[in-house]
Image (cartoon, rainbow, N blue to C red):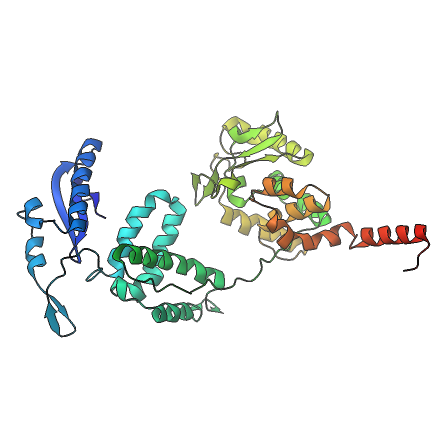
Length: 402
């Protein structure tokens, strides 16, 4: 399906479509305005329809186009010359790079800026060097599997090979591109039967309540309130670093998660479930009230530097988090463990799992029971004892012997 795009060099609109295996770009003299776009998109829809019906005549629309000479040339194939196919249903002549760029331009409007950057990096660093110049419909399942195996053997720093999770993230755009190309050009996708690699279970290493209290008592004074909120709300790094006073409701004792900080930019949360209201416990309420006296008058971020600008999580982690753990002789943990700590403390206190899931931004309780539940017996010191006590009481009452 063709598109109407703007040429960056001139700011004028152009047609961009495929015909007989050739990517055709036809320039216009029209400025990029809503009215002009609407006008050209109507022409583009008509061209697409005629191409599909086999009635499209290139010179009728673009009589002076340089593409007419290219379309008239035969295509060399395996030592012989064949006529360029009249159908637009094949991908002959279109490389993976060409189609991937088309796919990227069509989808980027629906992606967050951070994800666009991730996909662009995956294309340039991993996919184009291997598949870029291959014809998109000729990529085989064997080539895909070989590529995936190569990723597992690439030396990254002192570690040999990428992790299964990282490899899956690289394979996802490849799968999406090839499946889309197969659907458009009517060939069988080579991704059939290729499943994601199994990812090891998430390493959860929460703090005990005693460790939390010790950390808060020794961390640098200007960051004590910051970590008090982190430990007792389960907010993600981007959520607390991007927390603004307009989303702190002291009257209802709620923190409204409506935005998050990603690479220094404010964005909407990653998923719909992440948009939520987090209850303020008394320690959190007290911490934010104190923090209001420090940064509330600035009217922006709840936690910020002296100029009112947002915190940089890498800087905070390297200068505050890790040095404090080292000073206290605690195990080195990622800051994300504050979130895991909140979940395990809530579970240990007997809070409703569905309530906990909503507070954490999970769509279900599945993660609670698969990831966190194993820590509850250690925190409550009641590893099966409630059931044993029930049995002992009933057996004693009935005079039975166990």
